[in-house]
Image (tube, rainbow, N blue to C red):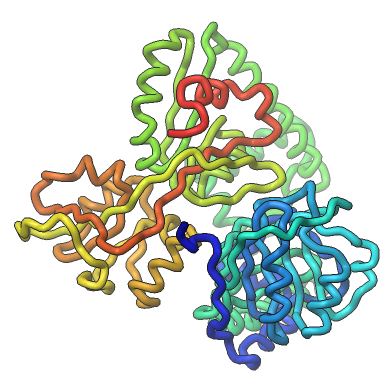
Length: 490
């Protein structure tokens, strides 16, 4: 048996203490603003003890309800480290309690974050000097059977955390700062804090304006395919019809503000829209069911036979299949835009259930006119600076990210935000290459100018996950159909 999921990395590069300390007084919300508002762990993680969380990530991956590797970590952790634990969303069995927290406190750990349950919450809540974040509590204690991994990339709270990344937390939540961007993020956040202090002064002085509101009106007009003046005139007509003033306008000022009646009208308008949508859906209601699925193109390709079978055998079915990136699936489920999603990124949470349904290999696809007869290639033969990636796959899957760093290093990589990997291949320059799931590489073999190679080195496989909203699992027709025709595995 291989040592996969049983790896222990004893040493890793920690950032300078001076760099970490730059984040000491920076608000987490402002930090997240300066990282495009996408660096925060999900809101299910709550603080259970006092103090600001700040330190260097020391990562841990454990099975559900097991903490064997956590005991091993006590021997390895260093002052200033934050223990970040991926535990498969263990909510019915606590991963640790007050005894272990005290153990890590004595070792001068800077905090603990776990995407599962803890116990002894009252005692932990009285502690100072070691902030603890968790998703909930359970009196059930953990097992100590293993396996597990120490200091490998993990996914906690929907964010990838690598050993050495900087972890910051306060009452608002937790953000993960990739160490290579830390200095830049710290500087930008300090500047934003100063700017917000000036805004607050203007608010108190009554001189603050919102010029961006004018831009918002312009954007709204563009979306509606009407001019901004048309939007303004329709607002005035609505005010005349209702006999109330909805917005206040001041000469010489580009912005507008909602009046008290305007704010009340917003709630009424939302109710109107909801009633309208329900009425429209009622008029369209027919005797067929609509089911919707979404996932990366490579997984949809694997499922093409399933989709075809649905259309042939389920006569009363209206099928909607959407192509998206793995990172979008949880958002689409929470927005109720789809019934079932498929993703390569594991991110189970309190409202999203996920299970593995299969795996597939990755191949190398290169843009080249070369006619070499070999079908295999070593990654060491490739020019890493010529790699192109579809954002959201390799760097968001911990096992692949670690493997990629081992063979390709930390050099700058060209990223493309594309739903379609096939489109990526058509856009690549001569000599560039990328990793692609095998379900797609079979489709491009034989296309002039593209070569497909199997990777000689042992490479982690892409795991495909099915994802659904937990609240829908009892009645979800799309899930029932998948189980009927596919079962548990692709």
